[in-house]
Image 1: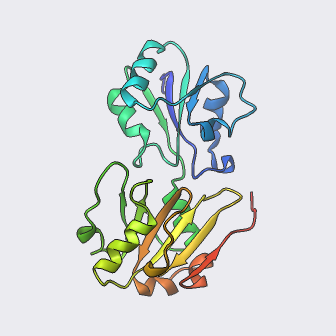
Image 2: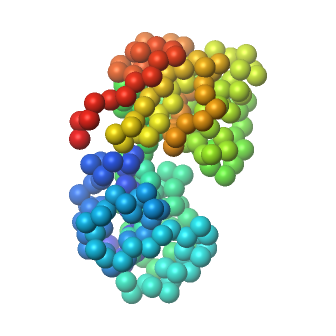
Image 3: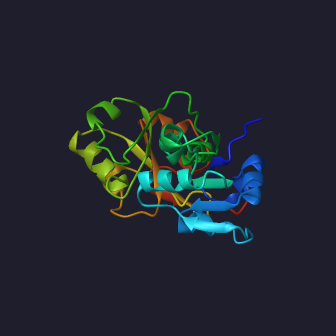
Amino acid sequence: MNDARLSVVGLGPGDVGYLTPRARGLIERCDVLIGSPRQLACFPEVRQEKRLLDASLPALAAWLAAHREQRVVVLASGDPMLYGIGDYLSRHADGPLLVVPGISAVQYLFSRLGLSMNDIYLTSSHGREPDFDFILRHGKVAMMTDRHIGPYEIARQILSRGLRRTLAVGENLSYADERIHILSPDRVAREYDMNVVAILDEHYLTAGHGALRSGPDKWTGFPDER
């Protein structure tokens, strides 16, 4: 058994219905729950102390070191070790750390599209400048986006190279207002809510099911299955 008093818990794509039993048990038994406002709002029934996630990761690490005797759970979107906070804390936590995986937004999107993840190139624009010349050599790409480089910027990069690609923009995945947009690059809007993007060669349009079968320039939501 792991005797860590600090845990980083993957929330999954968003809806708490995708939370693992192990993760839920740690949240219910913790002394302090740390996360963003939206993450903390997922647990109105939790009466323990709640703390907003520090904007500075070094400040978070310092606070955790000063409270190492408490059972602390840090919430992470998706999977903590997939471009997530788990990577930082695994290198800077003062003492044992338990990381509980979650379903990533990329996994969720590809499941909705009915496409295998076996041959994807997985990357992120979080805090980095993507090498689009390299990225767009791949026929099936999953990109986790941020507010600086999102679907519109990706589409511009595709158009500037004269490439034929289809984008699947997964917006608010797993929430009641989920939308998956299947678009040619010239039809991508400037703004979307939180999202991940699949960049696909043309032949993948016939490989999946569900949203992908809607074809370019269509969007779809999904019925509430939770």
